[in-house]
Length: 83
Image: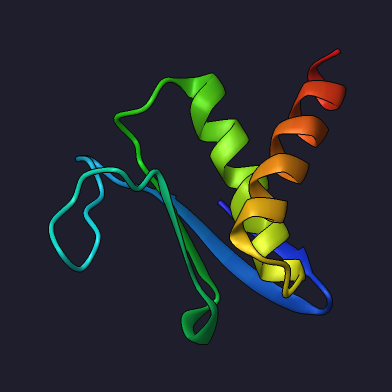
């Protein structure tokens, strides 16, 4: 899947296994690679969680907000969109 944001095309893919951070911790559900215009979502998570993580990563790509703000904003926006 791809999405266009601010005139740039981002490729969105889901993984076939859990994502790992640089130190091997399996607590990451999404990664945004700005240099490659790539968002990778953990494909092992359930569909609802994947959607929430995608919104979270889109907010990261569109802003320079701190992680805590992106996390809260993403959860609230996802809840609003679901309602």
